[in-house]
Length: 168
Image 1 (cartoon, one colour):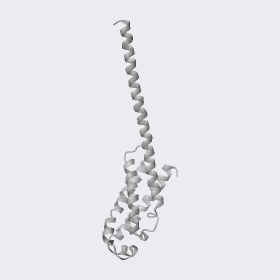
Image 2 (image 1 turned 45 degrees about the vertical axis):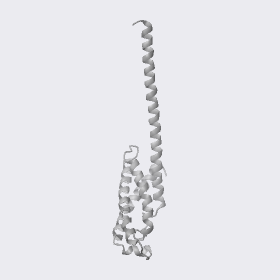
Image 3 (image 1 turned 135 degrees about the vertical axis):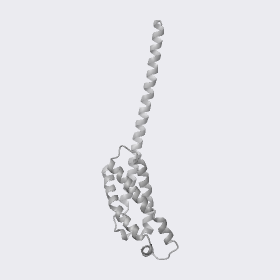
């Protein structure tokens, strides 16, 4: 191999290394941007859940004062945002474990509580009695009150953890 061929080979190798370096740098930059986007989406999702928890008094009032005719629609919205937060945090390594565990626990309990809405809707359908009085005859009313009592401290802990994590 003569000198010109050696120079051409060296230039070809340098060009190949340069190309590999550029591709690696582009991939790293894209991944970094995706991680930043994922972080923003996660915080936005957690902020929505936090705002929902602050907006509702479902978990802070005396449980047997809740009028479930109005409580279940609030619970439906909260359940959607809690499920979204749970899905986003399920594999997140950036979230403190205690916060991820609280989100999972609240998600499970809210979903369980929300599952009584079909029973309530079936029971109350076509009834003329005011919802607050009607729910006292609803067979599942005592169960729902106990579940609400049990979930309230879990939601309180989650609200405090979200406030700390989000810096509020």
